[in-house]
Length: 71
Image 1: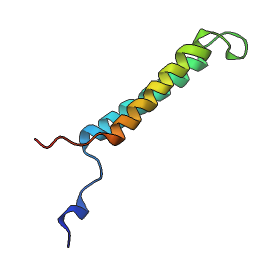
Image 2: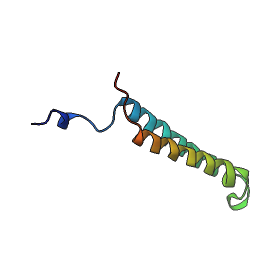
Image 3: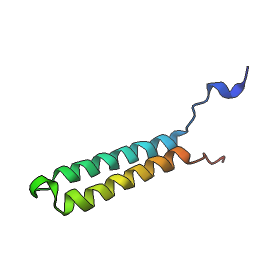
């Protein structure tokens, strides 16, 4: 039997980064919902919120692709 079968695909830092990314994505959606302009066409709904959301997805991709450091 292979000894690597019982290991998880990611390590603790990867999971922490995934949770941080999820939090940033949710923060972006919350920022977009706070826009008071009609139909969400203000600065928060069109610029700040989407940029924060995209940053959260970048953190998620980086967390998935990051290789663990062997110390």
